[in-house]
Image (cartoon, rainbow, N blue to C red):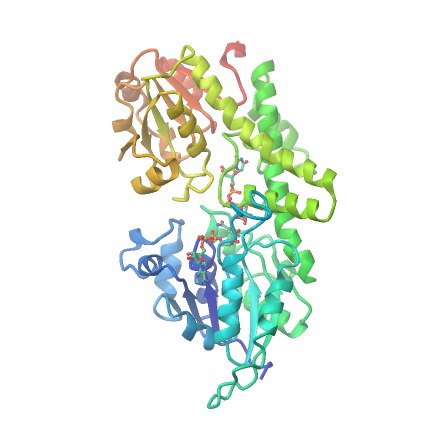
Length: 468
Ligand code: NAD
Ligand code: UGA
């Protein structure tokens, strides 16, 4: 039975990872039926929308992949029981946010959705099932999953089915895609990581990826290395951002330019140029939660110096956002009470509609607390998402950047959407109150052009006062 090729895959969780990653598997393995299931019916309905604009997540080229396989061998549904029962391989791709209460609150991952998934698999699966951890998890979560599944193994054997015994193999296969480039990352990953001890299951999963990925890129490890590597990869990436953001402040104080420093430093091949863009601090659903998880794990194992070391990355991130708010207030004559400010960009990075942990949330909230009136524009984020994230409807949301700038004192660019560079900045200048400020926290605008138009400008990591 165990030697059968994989014919049917189920993925629990139709989110930012489950949807795109299963779509790419389905595209490259047309003979495998892939069922993506979720308890959130509304989300499932959106995944099934004929109008691709209504998909629950925005990702460049996702629509093209769905056009190829949705309805053929890729299905989105809430049929959890049925999809688990017929699957040879089940990916768990559910959310693993930071716990908000109880033991480990503020640091540990909340594994209640993982546990629920394991219980569903234990109850509904039939025959031998390969269970794949796709979610990002604390090290040794496979142990928990194994314990839950073990309590179901060989129990409740259905009478009239050819798949008689209920057995499981557990693999770890963390996902490294970044939002905004998910399809490209899934099509051309730097590596595919598979952790486990059951070689046959590892080969079955590995063979799926090898349909379109160079076999040299498939890394096989033990379960714990795989689980830990995912947390460490995110911590290293976030560490680079906090490093460059800390230096951005030093650049502003000394007259150095962060883009010049990043180029000079990143040109060393040992350091590399990527992920050295200074900004308003990292956002997204994972960096903060995964570092907090790493900190929690380190403390759990009594490694307090290790925990303190990694926690600094988050401290610098929060400090960068606070410092940007403070300097906006300072530049606007020490008060923004009653002043209209435009926020350009609400997603946590460009090319996604995801606002989780977006720097725009913290910065907008702080500016509101100081009494500012906020006009917010983002090309992809829906109004309701903004209201929910800020926790108030006391903001004005606009459908275009131009509409958002009338009579504002300042524009604060918080997401690097390409369209911001291409705006009619002469017109924007005319529409704003004078003096007109632009705060470019992403270095995504043409500073010289804007200064020539007459704007006052602050850009992260360089102070105009020193530019002569
Ligand atoms: P998400 O919140 O977008 O999606 C998770 C989905 O799982 C939700 O739709 C939820 O309703 C569903 N779900 C939860 N419990 C369920 C259950 N018992 N049965 C059926 N459905 C259930 O989350 P995401 O962004 O896709 O992240 C998923 C995991 O992948 C997380 O562990 C995250 O850390 C990791 N990850 C995310 C990214 C990313 O870019 N977002 C990248 C790599 C890894
Ligand atoms: C990140 C990782 O890049 C993925 O490999 C990982 O799979 C994923 O987290 C995850 O586990 O969820 P993501 O958060 O989608 O992906 O996006 P990133 O491109 O990493 O950006 C994260 C944040 O850092 C954004 O707010 C972005 O604007 C910021 N950033 C990124 C910078 O400020 N500077 C940079 O140079 C790069």
